[in-house]
Structures are given as structure tokens and as C-alpha cells.
Length: 162
Image (cartoon, rainbow, N blue to C red; front, side, top):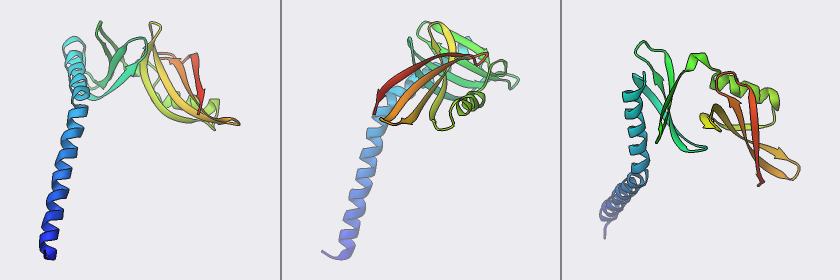
């Protein structure tokens, strides 16, 4: 075979592999994307949300989707969507993610914040902070919870050492 045939064969194999991997990824993520779209539609129908910007999944007392967006006049809104209903808050009436990150930096500059997400814990709307910290015995992961509206510290869950 000439180098042209090998090149064409290689390109065909690469293209086939890319198509197969893309379809596999879409099939794996399809249910998650459908759930997100359904949560956004529910938020549109049952809240003041007019434009959705992003959706995050939260797994606390019950699984939920947190939809970030704005109302008809452009004010930021956060909507929690669960199987049992929805809850809406004006984002400007609560502490924001950046303020929570600043609290964490003030608490201990050595910790590494991995995620900050609104959620619900024990019937309270909260900010959940997932972070890790190096300790003498290894790396430990934590969840801190702060009140959504006032940013008051609520609780910390410590995970096992890694």
C-alpha cells in the first residue's frame, strides 16, 4: 500500500472513532441533559424566572436542580427545583458565592475550595462549600454549610482522609 492509502485509512479510522466516542458521550449524558432541561422548563412555568443561565445538580436531603438566571426585568434569580415543588429567591437579597468564598479564605487560606453551590439541608436553604485541606496525615475533604440569606455558619461534615 502506498502512503496515500495509509493516510486515507488512518483518517477514516480516526473519523469513525471520533463519531463513535461522540455518540457514546451523548448517550451517557443524555439523561442528565434532559433532567436539566426539564428543571429549567419547570422553573419557567412555576416561578418568575424569565432567562436561565445555568443549571447545577445538588444532592442533599433530596436531589434537586438549582437554576440560575434572571427575571423579566433582569434581576438575578435562583430557583431550586425538586420533585415536590420549587423555591425561588432573589439573588440580590442573599449573600453571594463570592462572599462565601471570601469567608472560606478568611477561615483558612490554606484550604482549597472546589465548589460552592446553593442547596437545601434540613429544610434550610444553604450555601454548600466543598473543599479540601492538607493535614499532617494526608488530604481531607470537607463540606461546610452557610445560611443562604445571611451567610451564617451552620455545620461542617468531615470526610475520611485520602
